Length: 95
Image 1: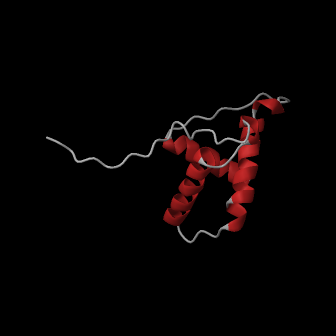
Image 2: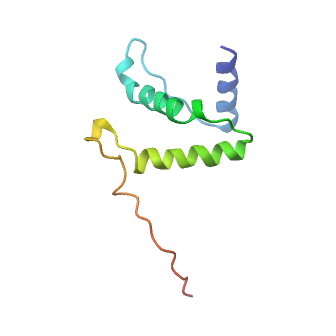
């Protein structure tokens, strides 16, 4: 409860909006619960972050892996976005 108050205050302070599911409608957020469980099991329970910057870097690396490399059973064991992420070689800028 105390954390929820702090989270609500932070959301309001940054000008973000929240989306709530209808009570008694767990199917509306099953994918979120699945994601949270994976992030907790595959990342958060295995790491100790010594700074906010370290957490940002490690979590971003995990997020990229989760979306572009990690197989997802609901997608036939394919990653969700490998086709949409195209690594490009840096090109010189011409003026």
